[in-house]
Image 1 (spheres, rainbow, N blue to C red):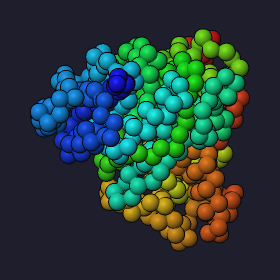
Image 2: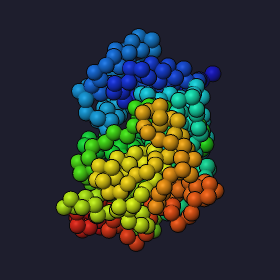
Image 3: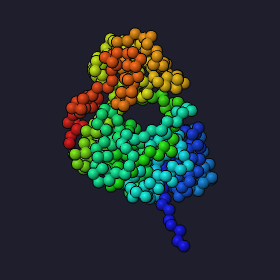
Image 4: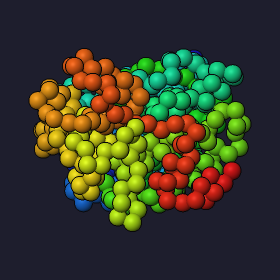
Length: 412
C-alpha cells in the first residue's frame, strides 16, 4: 500500500532580541499535530541570547534550520528565510507569538480540500492574562470568480475610513509558495512600516481561489513594550511611507480599475500617515492639519483612546502646545497604566472640563462604539470629534502628509 506524500509547509520565523519569548514560540511550532514542517528561523543580528536559544532547538528537532545574519530588519529576515524555503506552502510565525497545536493541520486541511491558493485566518490577541478572538471584516467562506473580485474590492479598505477587509498580517495566513515567493523576495529592504501589507495584498491578487476562515489558533502576543508606541519623528518616516505606497502601487497596476485598488491603497496609506503623525503636519512652525471636524487650537481637549493613534496624538499635541489636554482615557486604562502611561477610565470625563473629546482611532467601527458609549454617559454628541476624511479629498490629504506634489506620487 502506497503511503500518500504529505505536503511540506515552510514556516518562516524572524527573530530579533526576544530571548524571553522565542522558546515558547518554537515549542508551539514543533508540537504541531501536523509534522511535515520545515522550520526556518532567522536570527537577525540579535544582541541578547535569542540566537543561542535558536541553536539549542536545532539539537531538539531536526526540522529546525537556523540562519544567523547581520541586522537588516524584518523584510530582510523574511527574504533570507524565503530564499531557502522548499515547502509547497509557506506560513509565518513571529518569534514572540505562538500557535495552538492544531493551527497548521487545520489550515492545511482547508487549503487542500478547497483547492485554494491561500487561506486567511483570524487570530487571538493576547494581552496580559486575556485572549480576544479577532476576525477579518469580510465574511468567512471560499472566494473565486466574481466573489473573488468582490473580495479584492474590499480587502485593503472596506470603503469606510478606515477598516481593512482582510488583516494586513502575514502570520495568520497560509500561501502556496508559488504565489508568494517572488513577491516576498521583491520587497524593498528599506520598508519598515507596513511590511506585511506590502506582501499580503499583492500575493492575494495572484490567487484564483481564497478561503477566509475564523480560525483563532494564532496567538498574537501584545507585549508591554509593544503597547508603548515608539516611533521616529513623522518627518523621518515620510520616505518610508512613500516607499510603501510605491511598492504596493506597482504591484496593483496591472489589475482592473473596477477593483478600486488604488483608492483602497490611498486610504490605507493615509490612515497610516494619520496614525504615525497623530494627524498633525507642521509647516513653517505652524500646525496645519488635524483630521477632525473642528480646529483644536487653543481648546480644552480630552483624548479617548490610548492605542497607537491615541499615543501619537497625545504626544504631538503636547509637543506643539496646540491645545490644553485636560484628560486622557481608555476602556483598557489599567493595561496602559501597567505600561506607565497616565491613562484614566472613561468616567474621568464626568469630572473634567473640556470643549471637545477626540476619539483616538481610525477604525470606523471602534469610533461608532466609542461615540455610543460616551453619549450613554451623558456627553453631548457635538463635543465628540472623530476622524473626518471625505472620499474625494483622500488623495489631496495624502499628498499633504507625504509633502509631495500629487503628480509625484499618484502618477497613474
